[in-house]
Length: 111
Length: 114
View: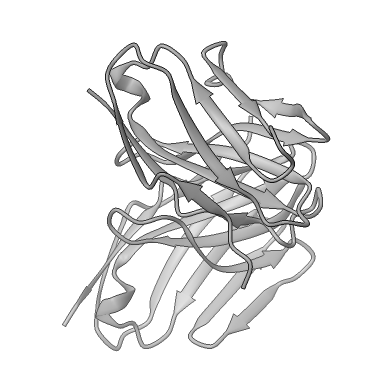
């Protein structure tokens, strides 16, 4: 079945850039998403990218997609302490009609 | 901005009881989903619903689970004979097309089975 893999932890200093990586297996993926989850809270959609795009930029967020390698990354520029959270990569597979999530990457931003 | 609304935000129930989790999807959306997140684990797909019937379900979604769209606005998840391991955050989502440009999650219902 479909699988999405992420590294579990990332620690950066305030002001640095953060890069969170994700790989997926479903070649029918049409949309790839990044969600942010703060402790005890729901899923906040940060950004998404359509599978025929290579890059999407939205303010401090840059998403890069390498469709050949099925690799997705999220870059957060000028990371702030408020960015500390769990970040989930997810893909929506047109064949499956559902989203598959990664395990989530816990981002810790140190002052 | 349109939202998916879930109620209650937190539900506590005794083992063996039945619970109903409620969701109000975005009004013009046609596709509805339930996902589950056990504490500290990944978000898992449970079921998708379209045209008043289940279109896909995972192996988690066994006979103790059921979904319903009783009145054209609410979308409910019923869990019968709850067990401790059903404790989780349950997320509802809706989208306006099969390729979900407008795929939106609710803020979740935390279910605690005691």
